[in-house]
Length: 67
Length: 219
Image (cartoon, rainbow over all chains, first blue to last red; front, side, top):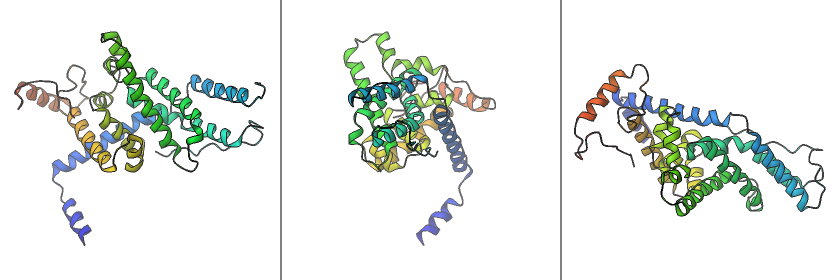
């Protein structure tokens, strides 16, 4: 099976290749951490105001009273 | 990372409103954190990013009739955000006369330099990548998008995304480990002394291009 060949090659990585992969994983974790840090921040009030304005505009458009 | 389940429409809340619109708005709300994260990675600063994310929400709301329910809303929103980012930047380039103040108002332009002093090494290294490599790496490596979705967002072939991600990863590692691209702003972490010495030796050695210590930007 071709799959076996691939695996057997990757089973004997030299130290440098292994170090590079470990380093890549560490950088990948750091990238995800940066992204997740922003995603986990509380949503600023500006955004909630914006959605509220969208709502009000929608009410006005459909002829409903803005409460 | 797993996207949170979209908020369901609560009966009684927004009574009388169109259910579809209300659902759509709840789903927008749930995706705001990811819009902010993607915008931050594109612009490199918080204020510009939040403006961009808000513009995206307005555009998305105005275009909601063109969204096909059941398809990937997150990818749809990211596409809008990315389009908005590049169109804002083109407009800034067209309108602003070239001076330092203008450069600093351009998202992804001069501001990066100002803000980079407050960022981690990885964040600063990310600013050294090309836009194409950076967005591909963020979408796939941090945002958890498939290569297929990332290709749709970036309007390019799946193979192109794969090669951009691979090149971005390689470039990031080269920038972070011994390359002199971050010269002047790099703060080697503890235990990096040997690497820093090697990097300094590299700077003393003329490069192939005959430009010792020259600023290299990976493409």
